[in-house]
Length: 228
Length: 115
Image 1 (cartoon, rainbow over the protein chains, first blue to last red):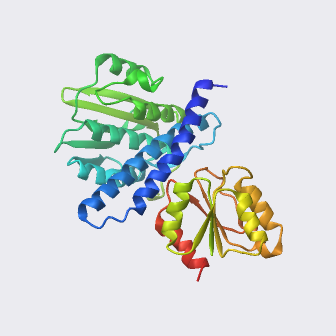
Image 2: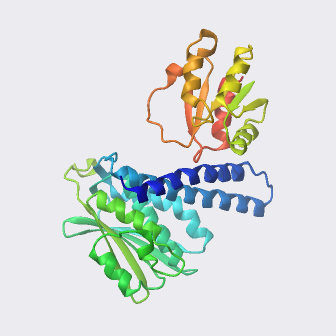
């Protein structure tokens, strides 16, 4: 039994209850003014993001149990859904988010729930490192027989040592990628573990003015209904 | 009357606030069962699963064993990832996840079962 991961699991369960309470308290808050409503929404959103991370940590433990079935997943639909969920956050922080795709019907072999978390964590990371009035870009394209989802930010570039670690494959643990100021690398760790489970590759590209993180997913052999 | 059975006082009070009506909070399943045994049958129960002492499913087993309590509608309110089983044999009419539910979700059940 992996004692370290079990400790994370216990901590995750312990954290979930107070976070759920905080969210309920925020939802119960009856402030009437515009500013009150803004604060209320922010409290709800912050607690929901924290709950999502806690749930992702629980899922990492469950990966060992093989509970997440692989299935044909419409990658664009997942990216759309994540984009919708995080749209408000980009707006609140005065950032822009754009999405481009070369094949809107492409199906990949993945688990939808895990893929959602991978895209969510990459996009949140991009938001975190993008400056005010800059944009983050999500691009879906075919690359060497796989589908690549590439998420680009215009923040500080990755340190070379961290970039090399990511290039080698997947991320061992969150602290090994305390990669840019203000980050524990937890989101990338989660994305990396989920991607590995799905047989997908994660990677990063350093730019002079930012970083791209990507996940490459195997194309599903099942034909999309839209292609028939 | 609505019963809320949850050992987390703050969560229980949030549910009570969402109900916007008469509701009684119990911190454990035994106190709620005693109240029901005394003849005070609630119209609806919001039930947590992980409780101090007997858990929510022990409580459900108990209520399902008697004809007068078997039909009490119960909404499970939990942070656990419960399997998507059919719990209707226990009177369960819905499952709410604590980290996802809204006051509107709670009121939906109140409006449906406490007319």
